[in-house]
Structure formats: C-alpha cells, structure tokens
Amino acid sequence: MSKKVITSANAPSPIGPYSHANLATPGSMLFVSGQVAKDAKTGELTLTDTKSETRKVMQNVSAILSEAGMDLSNVVKTTIFLKSMDLFADVNEVYGSFFKGDFPARETVAVAVLPLNVNVEISVIAVK
Image (cartoon, rainbow, N blue to C red; front, side, top):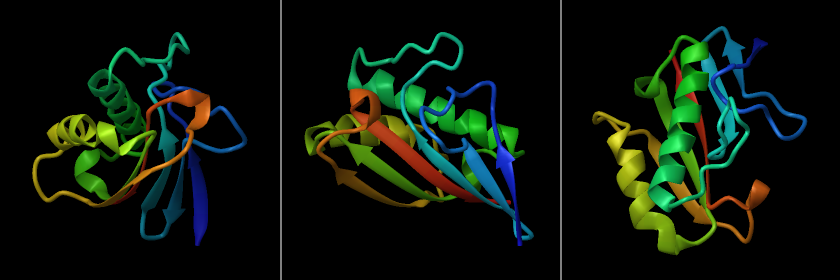
C-alpha cells in the first residue's frame, strides 16, 4: 500500500503539520483532514453564523475531494466536531443539503474547543 498526499489550492492551507488529505492506494481510500470555515484565498474565517460556517466547511471538504477526482458522493464516513450540541440542528440542516441520499456513516461530537476557536470542524473518508 502506498500513500499520495492531496493538496488543493481551493481549500485553506493547513494550520499545522498535516496534509489536506492522503490517498491510500491501491483501493483509493481518501482520508480528508478536518476542515474549518477558512477562506482559501483570503485566509479569513467565516464565523458570521453557524449555517454559513458549515457551508464554508463543506465547500472546503468538496474542494479537497475534487482535487482527488472525487466528490461528496464518494464519502463513506464523516466526523463532525461541534463547539456545542446547541449547534446541531443548523449544522445538520446545511450538512444534509450537500448530499443527495445514500448518506455516509457519521458521528457528531461536542468538544471543549476547536482550532482557531471555530464552531464546526468536519473530516471525511471517501472511496473511489
């Protein structure tokens, strides 16, 4: 098994020692690092409201998937980290709008704090 690092110019630069994603071959499993609502071009965070923040997170995830020749239909597993479970309904509504059925497996957990003090972080695993 080998790994190929995936980097997208359309997703924000990692804020630490990690890659946007790693593609494990053969088998083509893509492991996408947790994404936050940071704009790839300006570096600014989108924290105006939970729905906008979640939308930007999903756009960043989608950009990385695209770089690997995949899209959200390839996602088999997601992990959603929330600053508070009070955000669940808004995040769930926006997250769900990005999928067209055959939803991936998922867990959603509340944590004490997230990088850059964001409210939402999402990571995914996808397969070709």
